[in-house]
Amino acid sequence: MHGRTPHAAPRVAIVGGGISGLAAAHRLRLLLGPDAKITVIEQSDRLGGKLRTTELAGVRFDVGAEAFLHRKPEAQELIDEVGLSGDVVHPTAAKTSIHAAGRTHQLPAHTFMGVPASVEAVRHVLSSEGALRVEMEPTLPPVELRGGDVAVGALMKDRFGPEVADRLVNPLLGGVYAGRADELGLRATMPQIATLLDKGVGSLLAAAAMMMPAPPQPRAARPPVFASLSSGVSSLVDRLAEVAKPEVRLGLPVRVLSWLGDGWRLEIGSAATPEYLECDGVVLAVPAPSARKLLHEIAPQVSAAYGKVEVASMAVVALALPPGTQLPDRSGILIAEGERYSDRITPFTAKAFTFSSRKWSHIGEPVILRGSVGRHGETALLQRSDADLVKAVRNDLHELTGIRAEPIDYVVQRWGGGLPQYGVGHLDLVETIEKGICDVPGLAVAGATLHGVGVPACIATADAAAARVAAHLLGRVRR
Image (cartoon, rainbow, N blue to C red):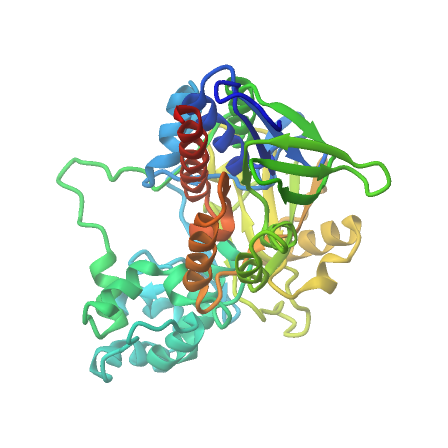
Protein backbone atom coordinates (compact mmCIF):
# COMPACT_ATOMS: atom_id res chain seq x y z
CA MET A 1 0.00 0.00 0.00
CA HIS A 2 2.88 2.38 0.73
CA GLY A 3 3.66 4.56 -2.24
CA ARG A 4 0.44 3.60 -3.98
CA THR A 5 -0.57 5.93 -6.81
CA PRO A 6 -3.60 8.22 -6.41
CA HIS A 7 -5.39 6.31 -9.17
CA ALA A 8 -5.03 2.82 -7.69
CA ALA A 9 -8.32 1.10 -6.90
CA PRO A 10 -9.36 1.88 -3.32
CA ARG A 11 -9.36 -0.92 -0.77
CA VAL A 12 -11.87 -1.08 2.05
CA ALA A 13 -12.16 -3.59 4.88
CA ILE A 14 -15.53 -4.12 6.55
CA VAL A 15 -15.31 -5.79 9.94
CA GLY A 16 -18.56 -7.63 10.64
CA GLY A 17 -20.73 -9.57 8.22
CA GLY A 18 -24.19 -8.76 9.56
CA ILE A 19 -26.81 -6.60 7.86
CA SER A 20 -24.85 -3.44 8.71
CA GLY A 21 -21.63 -4.76 7.20
CA LEU A 22 -23.24 -6.08 4.01
CA ALA A 23 -25.36 -2.96 3.51
CA ALA A 24 -22.15 -0.92 3.83
CA ALA A 25 -20.47 -3.18 1.26
CA HIS A 26 -23.34 -2.65 -1.16
CA ARG A 27 -23.30 1.12 -0.73
CA LEU A 28 -19.51 1.29 -1.08
CA ARG A 29 -19.69 -0.71 -4.31
CA LEU A 30 -22.12 1.83 -5.73
CA LEU A 31 -20.03 4.78 -4.54
CA LEU A 32 -16.56 3.47 -5.44
CA GLY A 33 -17.32 1.47 -8.55
CA PRO A 34 -16.51 -2.04 -9.76
CA ASP A 35 -12.74 -1.80 -9.34
CA ALA A 36 -12.76 -1.11 -5.61
CA LYS A 37 -11.53 -4.03 -3.51
CA ILE A 38 -14.03 -4.56 -0.69
CA THR A 39 -13.32 -7.24 1.89
CA VAL A 40 -15.82 -8.37 4.53
CA ILE A 41 -14.25 -10.09 7.52
CA GLU A 42 -16.56 -12.07 9.80
CA GLN A 43 -15.38 -14.05 12.80
CA SER A 44 -18.23 -16.58 12.68
CA ASP A 45 -18.68 -19.19 9.97
CA ARG A 46 -21.53 -17.39 8.15
CA LEU A 47 -22.79 -14.01 7.07
CA GLY A 48 -25.93 -12.45 8.50
CA GLY A 49 -25.22 -11.51 12.09
CA LYS A 50 -28.54 -11.39 13.96
CA LEU A 51 -30.38 -12.32 10.78
CA ARG A 52 -30.50 -16.07 10.41
CA THR A 53 -32.84 -18.19 8.32
CA THR A 54 -32.62 -21.91 8.94
CA GLU A 55 -34.42 -25.11 7.92
CA LEU A 56 -37.15 -26.20 10.32
CA ALA A 57 -39.14 -29.27 9.26
CA GLY A 58 -38.29 -28.45 5.65
CA VAL A 59 -39.45 -24.82 5.92
CA ARG A 60 -37.19 -21.78 5.73
CA PHE A 61 -37.66 -20.04 9.04
CA ASP A 62 -36.12 -17.02 10.77
CA VAL A 63 -34.53 -17.68 14.16
CA GLY A 64 -33.09 -14.15 14.45
CA ALA A 65 -34.82 -10.95 13.44
CA GLU A 66 -38.05 -12.03 11.74
CA ALA A 67 -39.33 -8.69 10.49
CA PHE A 68 -38.53 -5.03 10.01
CA LEU A 69 -40.41 -1.77 10.45
CA HIS A 70 -42.05 -1.05 7.12
CA ARG A 71 -42.80 2.55 8.05
CA LYS A 72 -39.09 3.33 8.15
CA PRO A 73 -37.90 3.52 4.52
CA GLU A 74 -34.33 2.22 4.64
CA ALA A 75 -35.05 -1.52 4.54
CA GLN A 76 -37.76 -1.33 1.89
CA GLU A 77 -35.63 0.95 -0.31
CA LEU A 78 -32.66 -1.42 -0.06
CA ILE A 79 -34.89 -4.40 -0.84
CA ASP A 80 -36.16 -2.57 -3.92
CA GLU A 81 -32.59 -1.73 -4.98
CA VAL A 82 -31.44 -5.34 -4.93
CA GLY A 83 -34.53 -6.78 -6.61
CA LEU A 84 -36.30 -8.52 -3.72
CA SER A 85 -39.51 -6.46 -3.79
CA GLY A 86 -41.51 -9.48 -4.90
CA ASP A 87 -40.55 -11.34 -1.72
CA VAL A 88 -41.97 -8.75 0.69
CA VAL A 89 -44.76 -10.07 2.91
CA HIS A 90 -46.77 -8.49 5.72
CA PRO A 91 -48.25 -9.96 8.89
CA THR A 92 -51.84 -11.13 9.06
CA ALA A 93 -54.44 -9.21 11.03
CA ALA A 94 -53.96 -11.50 14.05
CA LYS A 95 -53.51 -9.51 17.27
CA THR A 96 -50.87 -9.85 19.99
CA SER A 97 -51.72 -10.77 23.57
CA ILE A 98 -49.99 -10.11 26.84
CA HIS A 99 -49.88 -12.36 29.90
CA ALA A 100 -49.68 -10.29 33.07
CA ALA A 101 -50.97 -10.59 36.63
CA GLY A 102 -51.86 -14.22 35.92
CA ARG A 103 -54.18 -13.46 32.99
CA THR A 104 -53.84 -13.26 29.21
CA HIS A 105 -55.31 -10.13 27.59
CA GLN A 106 -55.24 -8.64 24.13
CA LEU A 107 -52.38 -6.12 23.90
CA PRO A 108 -53.98 -2.67 24.13
CA ALA A 109 -54.16 -0.93 20.77
CA HIS A 110 -53.92 2.73 21.76
CA THR A 111 -50.52 2.66 23.43
CA PHE A 112 -47.05 3.72 22.36
CA MET A 113 -44.53 1.06 23.42
CA GLY A 114 -46.93 0.32 26.27
CA VAL A 115 -47.42 3.96 27.29
CA PRO A 116 -51.20 4.46 27.36
CA ALA A 117 -52.87 7.12 25.25
CA SER A 118 -56.06 6.85 27.29
CA VAL A 119 -57.23 5.04 30.39
CA GLU A 120 -59.89 3.18 28.39
CA ALA A 121 -57.19 1.63 26.19
CA VAL A 122 -55.55 -0.14 29.15
CA ARG A 123 -58.33 -0.55 31.70
CA HIS A 124 -58.74 -4.27 30.90
CA VAL A 125 -55.08 -4.97 31.75
CA LEU A 126 -54.97 -3.01 35.01
CA SER A 127 -56.55 -3.16 38.44
CA SER A 128 -59.06 -0.46 39.33
CA GLU A 129 -56.33 1.29 41.32
CA GLY A 130 -53.91 1.04 38.37
CA ALA A 131 -56.53 2.46 36.01
CA LEU A 132 -57.18 5.36 38.38
CA ARG A 133 -53.44 6.16 38.43
CA VAL A 134 -53.48 6.37 34.62
CA GLU A 135 -56.61 8.51 34.59
CA MET A 136 -55.12 10.96 37.10
CA GLU A 137 -51.67 11.22 35.47
CA PRO A 138 -52.42 14.47 33.58
CA THR A 139 -53.21 16.17 36.91
CA LEU A 140 -49.69 15.55 38.25
CA PRO A 141 -47.05 18.29 37.98
CA PRO A 142 -45.68 18.40 34.40
CA VAL A 143 -42.79 16.10 33.49
CA GLU A 144 -39.62 18.18 33.10
CA LEU A 145 -36.61 16.40 31.67
CA ARG A 146 -34.57 19.64 31.50
CA GLY A 147 -32.48 18.18 28.69
CA GLY A 148 -31.54 15.13 30.73
CA ASP A 149 -32.40 11.47 30.40
CA VAL A 150 -34.29 9.16 32.74
CA ALA A 151 -34.88 5.42 33.07
CA VAL A 152 -38.13 4.43 31.40
CA GLY A 153 -39.23 2.26 34.32
CA ALA A 154 -38.67 4.97 36.92
CA LEU A 155 -40.64 7.52 34.89
CA MET A 156 -43.55 5.12 34.26
CA LYS A 157 -43.79 4.15 37.93
CA ASP A 158 -43.60 7.78 39.02
CA ARG A 159 -46.41 8.83 36.69
CA PHE A 160 -48.63 5.74 36.45
CA GLY A 161 -47.67 3.52 39.37
CA PRO A 162 -46.09 0.07 38.93
CA GLU A 163 -48.72 -1.68 36.82
CA VAL A 164 -48.20 0.11 33.48
CA ALA A 165 -44.46 -0.45 33.76
CA ASP A 166 -44.69 -4.11 34.81
CA ARG A 167 -47.62 -5.24 32.68
CA LEU A 168 -47.13 -3.24 29.48
CA VAL A 169 -43.93 -1.27 29.01
CA ASN A 170 -41.46 -3.81 30.42
CA PRO A 171 -42.71 -6.77 28.31
CA LEU A 172 -42.61 -4.67 25.13
CA LEU A 173 -39.12 -3.31 25.76
CA GLY A 174 -37.99 -6.80 26.76
CA GLY A 175 -39.11 -8.02 23.34
CA VAL A 176 -37.18 -5.32 21.47
CA TYR A 177 -34.02 -4.97 23.54
CA ALA A 178 -33.95 -8.11 25.73
CA GLY A 179 -33.68 -5.54 28.52
CA ARG A 180 -35.67 -4.06 31.38
CA ALA A 181 -37.51 -0.76 31.59
CA ASP A 182 -35.69 0.10 34.83
CA GLU A 183 -32.35 -0.02 32.98
CA LEU A 184 -33.27 1.48 29.60
CA GLY A 185 -33.18 5.21 28.87
CA LEU A 186 -36.17 7.17 27.60
CA ARG A 187 -34.30 9.23 25.01
CA ALA A 188 -32.92 6.25 23.10
CA THR A 189 -35.89 3.87 23.38
CA MET A 190 -38.78 6.36 23.11
CA PRO A 191 -37.28 9.45 21.45
CA GLN A 192 -40.66 10.65 20.18
CA ILE A 193 -42.05 10.79 23.73
CA ALA A 194 -38.90 12.53 24.98
CA THR A 195 -39.17 15.14 22.22
CA LEU A 196 -42.78 15.93 23.11
CA LEU A 197 -41.86 16.27 26.79
CA ASP A 198 -39.03 18.64 25.80
CA LYS A 199 -41.56 20.74 23.91
CA GLY A 200 -43.66 21.21 27.03
CA VAL A 201 -46.20 18.39 26.79
CA GLY A 202 -46.15 17.72 30.50
CA SER A 203 -48.22 14.52 30.58
CA LEU A 204 -47.18 11.05 29.38
CA LEU A 205 -50.81 10.25 28.61
CA ALA A 206 -51.04 13.33 26.37
CA ALA A 207 -47.68 12.59 24.73
CA ALA A 208 -48.76 9.03 23.87
CA ALA A 209 -52.08 10.31 22.53
CA MET A 210 -50.20 12.70 20.23
CA MET A 211 -48.19 9.73 18.89
CA MET A 212 -51.29 7.81 17.82
CA PRO A 213 -51.79 7.66 14.04
CA ALA A 214 -54.76 9.52 12.61
CA PRO A 215 -57.79 7.31 11.91
CA PRO A 216 -57.77 6.02 8.32
CA GLN A 217 -60.07 7.65 5.83
CA PRO A 218 -63.29 5.75 5.06
CA ARG A 219 -62.51 2.57 3.09
CA ALA A 220 -58.76 3.32 3.35
CA ALA A 221 -56.57 0.67 4.95
CA ARG A 222 -53.72 1.61 7.25
CA PRO A 223 -50.29 0.95 5.74
CA PRO A 224 -48.62 -2.10 7.29
CA VAL A 225 -46.34 -1.46 10.25
CA PHE A 226 -44.08 -4.49 9.73
CA ALA A 227 -42.82 -6.54 6.81
CA SER A 228 -40.64 -9.56 6.17
CA LEU A 229 -39.30 -11.58 3.24
CA SER A 230 -40.98 -14.83 2.22
CA SER A 231 -37.58 -16.45 1.68
CA GLY A 232 -36.38 -15.33 5.13
CA VAL A 233 -34.94 -12.01 6.29
CA SER A 234 -31.38 -13.25 5.86
CA SER A 235 -32.02 -13.58 2.11
CA LEU A 236 -31.44 -9.81 2.06
CA VAL A 237 -27.89 -10.37 3.33
CA ASP A 238 -27.35 -13.13 0.74
CA ARG A 239 -28.53 -10.84 -2.06
CA LEU A 240 -26.36 -7.96 -0.85
CA ALA A 241 -23.33 -10.26 -0.98
CA GLU A 242 -24.26 -11.28 -4.54
CA VAL A 243 -24.71 -7.70 -5.71
CA ALA A 244 -21.79 -6.05 -3.90
CA LYS A 245 -19.38 -8.90 -4.69
CA PRO A 246 -17.03 -8.32 -1.76
CA GLU A 247 -14.30 -10.77 -0.91
CA VAL A 248 -15.72 -12.59 2.12
CA ARG A 249 -13.41 -13.98 4.81
CA LEU A 250 -15.25 -16.15 7.33
CA GLY A 251 -14.10 -17.62 10.62
CA LEU A 252 -11.48 -14.93 11.16
CA PRO A 253 -11.51 -12.55 14.11
CA VAL A 254 -9.91 -9.14 13.65
CA ARG A 255 -7.43 -8.90 16.52
CA VAL A 256 -5.71 -5.55 15.97
CA LEU A 257 -6.51 -2.42 13.94
CA SER A 258 -3.55 -0.11 13.24
CA TRP A 259 -3.20 3.27 11.52
CA LEU A 260 -0.08 3.36 9.33
CA GLY A 261 -0.10 7.07 8.57
CA ASP A 262 -1.60 6.75 5.09
CA GLY A 263 -3.83 3.74 5.51
CA TRP A 264 -4.88 0.87 7.75
CA ARG A 265 -3.59 -2.56 8.68
CA LEU A 266 -5.76 -5.30 10.18
CA GLU A 267 -4.33 -8.27 12.02
CA ILE A 268 -6.73 -11.16 11.50
CA GLY A 269 -6.90 -14.81 12.43
CA SER A 270 -5.20 -16.54 15.33
CA ALA A 271 -2.56 -14.94 17.53
CA ALA A 272 -0.18 -17.79 16.66
CA THR A 273 -0.48 -17.44 12.88
CA PRO A 274 -1.89 -13.97 12.13
CA GLU A 275 -2.59 -12.61 8.66
CA TYR A 276 -2.34 -8.93 7.77
CA LEU A 277 -4.64 -6.96 5.51
CA GLU A 278 -3.76 -3.43 4.40
CA CYS A 279 -6.44 -1.07 3.12
CA ASP A 280 -7.39 2.58 2.67
CA GLY A 281 -10.64 2.63 4.63
CA VAL A 282 -12.37 0.61 7.34
CA VAL A 283 -15.99 0.18 8.41
CA LEU A 284 -16.47 -1.34 11.86
CA ALA A 285 -19.89 -3.01 11.93
CA VAL A 286 -19.49 -5.06 15.10
CA PRO A 287 -21.10 -5.19 18.57
CA ALA A 288 -19.92 -2.76 21.24
CA PRO A 289 -17.46 -5.11 23.02
CA SER A 290 -15.57 -5.80 19.77
CA ALA A 291 -15.54 -2.12 18.78
CA ARG A 292 -14.18 -1.22 22.22
CA LYS A 293 -11.23 -3.61 21.83
CA LEU A 294 -10.36 -2.59 18.27
CA LEU A 295 -10.48 1.15 19.01
CA HIS A 296 -8.63 1.09 22.33
CA GLU A 297 -5.35 2.43 20.88
CA ILE A 298 -6.70 4.37 17.91
CA ALA A 299 -9.52 6.33 19.56
CA PRO A 300 -9.48 5.86 23.36
CA GLN A 301 -12.50 8.09 24.04
CA VAL A 302 -14.57 6.29 21.42
CA SER A 303 -13.45 2.95 22.83
CA ALA A 304 -14.43 4.04 26.34
CA ALA A 305 -17.89 5.08 25.13
CA TYR A 306 -18.41 1.69 23.47
CA GLY A 307 -17.27 0.09 26.71
CA LYS A 308 -20.16 1.70 28.57
CA VAL A 309 -22.76 0.03 26.34
CA GLU A 310 -23.87 -3.16 28.01
CA VAL A 311 -25.08 -6.10 25.94
CA ALA A 312 -27.67 -8.81 26.55
CA SER A 313 -27.94 -12.40 25.40
CA MET A 314 -31.04 -14.38 24.48
CA ALA A 315 -32.18 -17.55 22.76
CA VAL A 316 -34.88 -18.40 20.25
CA VAL A 317 -36.53 -21.82 20.58
CA ALA A 318 -38.31 -22.62 17.31
CA LEU A 319 -40.79 -25.50 17.31
CA ALA A 320 -42.48 -27.24 14.37
CA LEU A 321 -45.68 -28.93 15.51
CA PRO A 322 -47.70 -31.53 13.58
CA PRO A 323 -49.98 -30.23 10.82
CA GLY A 324 -53.43 -29.47 12.17
CA THR A 325 -52.24 -28.37 15.60
CA GLN A 326 -54.54 -25.55 16.65
CA LEU A 327 -52.71 -22.39 17.70
CA PRO A 328 -54.53 -19.56 19.47
CA ASP A 329 -56.07 -17.04 17.09
CA ARG A 330 -53.42 -14.41 17.80
CA SER A 331 -49.96 -13.58 16.49
CA GLY A 332 -48.22 -14.16 19.81
CA ILE A 333 -48.08 -13.59 23.55
CA LEU A 334 -45.76 -11.33 25.54
CA ILE A 335 -45.12 -12.52 29.09
CA ALA A 336 -44.55 -10.00 31.87
CA GLU A 337 -41.45 -10.54 33.97
CA GLY A 338 -41.99 -12.48 37.20
CA GLU A 339 -45.16 -14.24 35.98
CA ARG A 340 -45.80 -17.72 37.36
CA TYR A 341 -47.93 -20.70 36.38
CA SER A 342 -51.40 -21.14 37.85
CA ASP A 343 -49.75 -23.12 40.64
CA ARG A 344 -48.24 -19.76 41.72
CA ILE A 345 -44.86 -21.48 42.09
CA THR A 346 -43.40 -22.32 38.66
CA PRO A 347 -41.85 -19.33 36.85
CA PHE A 348 -42.15 -18.92 33.10
CA THR A 349 -38.92 -19.46 31.18
CA ALA A 350 -40.00 -17.70 27.97
CA LYS A 351 -40.55 -13.95 27.78
CA ALA A 352 -42.62 -14.19 24.59
CA PHE A 353 -44.11 -16.53 22.01
CA THR A 354 -44.62 -15.78 18.33
CA PHE A 355 -47.23 -17.99 16.69
CA SER A 356 -45.53 -17.74 13.32
CA SER A 357 -48.07 -19.78 11.35
CA ARG A 358 -50.76 -17.34 12.54
CA LYS A 359 -48.66 -14.22 12.11
CA TRP A 360 -47.36 -14.98 8.60
CA SER A 361 -49.74 -16.47 6.04
CA HIS A 362 -46.90 -17.63 3.78
CA ILE A 363 -45.55 -20.10 6.35
CA GLY A 364 -48.39 -22.62 6.23
CA GLU A 365 -47.79 -26.20 7.44
CA PRO A 366 -46.36 -27.65 9.57
CA VAL A 367 -47.45 -25.42 12.42
CA ILE A 368 -44.48 -23.27 13.48
CA LEU A 369 -43.93 -21.04 16.49
CA ARG A 370 -41.00 -19.61 18.41
CA GLY A 371 -40.37 -18.86 22.04
CA SER A 372 -37.94 -16.12 23.11
CA VAL A 373 -35.87 -16.66 26.24
CA GLY A 374 -33.57 -14.31 28.13
CA ARG A 375 -33.34 -10.74 29.38
CA HIS A 376 -30.32 -8.68 30.28
CA GLY A 377 -28.45 -10.34 33.14
CA GLU A 378 -30.17 -13.72 32.91
CA THR A 379 -26.96 -15.61 32.16
CA ALA A 380 -27.79 -18.74 34.21
CA LEU A 381 -31.01 -19.26 32.27
CA LEU A 382 -29.13 -19.37 28.97
CA GLN A 383 -26.55 -21.83 30.28
CA ARG A 384 -29.17 -24.56 30.28
CA SER A 385 -28.94 -27.25 27.60
CA ASP A 386 -30.92 -27.09 24.36
CA ALA A 387 -33.08 -30.03 25.49
CA ASP A 388 -33.80 -28.32 28.80
CA LEU A 389 -34.76 -25.04 27.10
CA VAL A 390 -37.05 -26.87 24.68
CA LYS A 391 -38.74 -28.70 27.56
CA ALA A 392 -39.22 -25.49 29.55
CA VAL A 393 -40.60 -23.57 26.56
CA ARG A 394 -43.00 -26.44 25.77
CA ASN A 395 -44.20 -26.38 29.37
CA ASP A 396 -44.76 -22.61 29.10
CA LEU A 397 -46.70 -23.15 25.87
CA HIS A 398 -48.92 -25.73 27.53
CA GLU A 399 -49.55 -23.47 30.52
CA LEU A 400 -50.58 -20.57 28.26
CA THR A 401 -52.46 -22.40 25.51
CA GLY A 402 -53.07 -26.02 26.53
CA ILE A 403 -51.01 -27.27 23.56
CA ARG A 404 -49.12 -30.49 24.33
CA ALA A 405 -48.26 -31.59 20.77
CA GLU A 406 -44.85 -33.23 20.39
CA PRO A 407 -42.60 -31.21 18.04
CA ILE A 408 -41.63 -32.87 14.79
CA ASP A 409 -38.55 -30.64 14.66
CA TYR A 410 -36.95 -27.88 16.69
CA VAL A 411 -34.06 -25.40 16.53
CA VAL A 412 -32.44 -23.60 19.44
CA GLN A 413 -30.58 -20.47 18.34
CA ARG A 414 -28.54 -18.67 20.98
CA TRP A 415 -27.63 -15.03 20.56
CA GLY A 416 -24.75 -14.31 22.90
CA GLY A 417 -23.89 -10.79 23.93
CA GLY A 418 -24.92 -8.98 20.77
CA LEU A 419 -28.04 -7.10 21.86
CA PRO A 420 -27.09 -3.56 22.95
CA GLN A 421 -28.80 -2.06 25.97
CA TYR A 422 -29.81 1.56 25.39
CA GLY A 423 -29.28 2.75 28.95
CA VAL A 424 -29.80 6.19 30.48
CA GLY A 425 -27.53 8.61 28.60
CA HIS A 426 -27.10 6.32 25.59
CA LEU A 427 -27.45 9.15 23.08
CA ASP A 428 -24.55 10.95 24.79
CA LEU A 429 -22.39 7.86 24.28
CA VAL A 430 -23.39 7.73 20.61
CA GLU A 431 -22.51 11.40 20.20
CA THR A 432 -19.07 10.74 21.75
CA ILE A 433 -18.56 7.81 19.38
CA GLU A 434 -19.56 9.67 16.23
CA LYS A 435 -17.67 12.87 17.06
CA GLY A 436 -14.57 10.90 17.97
CA ILE A 437 -14.67 8.85 14.77
CA CYS A 438 -14.78 12.08 12.74
CA ASP A 439 -11.20 12.73 13.85
CA VAL A 440 -9.96 9.40 12.43
CA PRO A 441 -9.33 9.40 8.64
CA GLY A 442 -10.96 6.69 6.57
CA LEU A 443 -12.70 5.00 9.51
CA ALA A 444 -16.43 4.71 10.14
CA VAL A 445 -18.72 2.75 12.44
CA ALA A 446 -22.12 1.18 11.90
CA GLY A 447 -24.49 -1.19 13.63
CA ALA A 448 -27.18 -1.66 16.24
CA THR A 449 -25.22 0.08 19.00
CA LEU A 450 -25.88 3.49 17.45
CA HIS A 451 -29.35 4.60 16.39
CA GLY A 452 -31.66 1.61 16.72
CA VAL A 453 -31.59 -2.17 16.92
CA GLY A 454 -33.95 -2.81 14.00
CA VAL A 455 -32.96 -3.62 10.41
CA PRO A 456 -33.82 -0.16 8.95
CA ALA A 457 -31.78 1.63 11.64
CA CYS A 458 -28.79 -0.64 11.00
CA ILE A 459 -29.02 0.01 7.26
CA ALA A 460 -29.11 3.77 7.90
CA THR A 461 -25.87 3.58 9.90
CA ALA A 462 -24.31 1.47 7.16
CA ASP A 463 -25.22 4.03 4.50
CA ALA A 464 -23.74 6.82 6.59
CA ALA A 465 -20.55 4.84 7.26
CA ALA A 466 -20.12 3.98 3.58
CA ALA A 467 -20.63 7.62 2.57
CA ARG A 468 -18.00 8.75 5.07
CA VAL A 469 -15.38 6.25 3.94
CA ALA A 470 -16.11 6.86 0.26
CA ALA A 471 -15.81 10.64 0.70
CA HIS A 472 -12.37 10.13 2.30
CA LEU A 473 -11.17 7.81 -0.48
CA LEU A 474 -12.56 9.86 -3.37
CA GLY A 475 -11.03 13.00 -1.88
CA ARG A 476 -7.65 11.30 -1.91
CA VAL A 477 -8.05 10.27 -5.53
CA ARG A 478 -8.86 13.84 -6.59
CA ARG A 479 -5.64 15.09 -5.04
